[in-house]
Image (cartoon, rainbow, N blue to C red; front, side, top):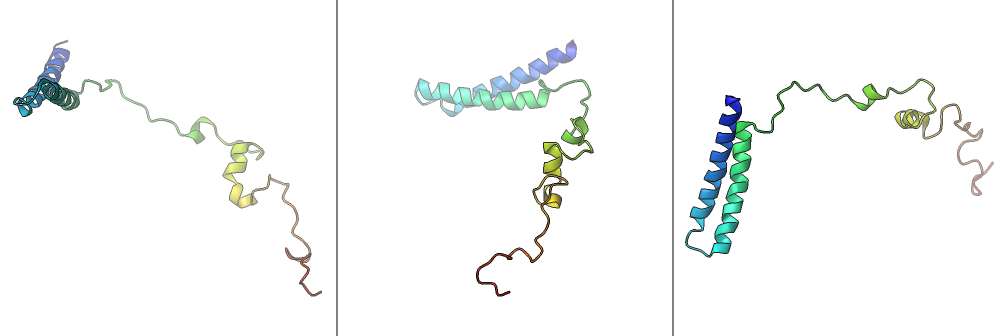
Length: 116
């Protein structure tokens, strides 16, 4: 409990320090600019105070986030969309076992300018 009180005190100290710096930087100007600078000082002071006091830090140990492959391993059948995406370059964009055969005379078999 005492730890939490000390953390809040550190946070509030830096928050008020930021507000004070914002006020001092614009003390000879209009109130609109003073308030704006105080808000900016509160923003920066709150960020620094929160970081130093570790207000938002979780206390329990975090487990590493599992990857997509660990959550959903690719089944061995080869027909799911994830299988097709994983083997796209190997299968040249065709589904497994559905790749068209290569033409007997090459890819330019029906070109008009080819002499047979």
